[in-house]
Image (cartoon, rainbow, N blue to C red; front, side, top):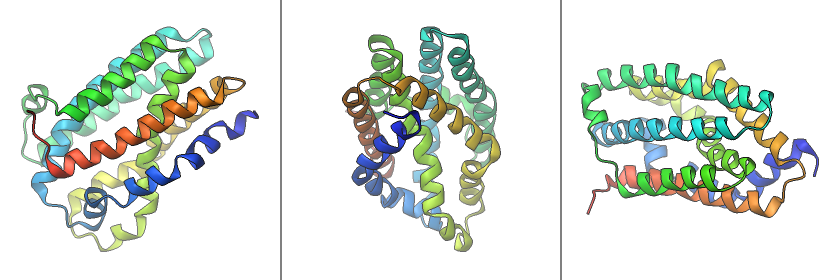
Length: 221
């Protein structure tokens, strides 16, 4: 398989679930400005917890890299997540009149636990290509969601939502995603495609389930 088509093929074959993500009412309402603010607050708190788990996961992936180049690429993603992403979330919580302690002390909903456990288990128990593949839908889907709903932002009267969405058009975020795509395409070269496909599809399904849980403000049992 040529290096340049690894992710392209994975993304193309997972398109049905990605289209469901694009059209999910949480995503549509967010970009149109009609999403109730309490649902967005619920999302912001839950997503902070997810971000912490993702940083831990990136640490595992960094430690499993067998060459310095790959290690550096993943470590750079980890660094950006642990610095700029955290800073952005702290500012967002402040604008929502929430305290950082609210996010730190939050108990995650079941989908968050299941999704992050899947990511960490894949990183720990599977070869590095599968671990990297598992995180790609999270990072890449935010870029595609933003591009898909870009025109809706023109009529979005909620400045906070527009500001949140603008992050996913930024040079820094796009550079971060490009690093992850580059690593996956390199690691996926000559790696069994069906294994990557399984991981990519499961992670994509979790992305949909995550948005759905945020919309329904899913409570713990």
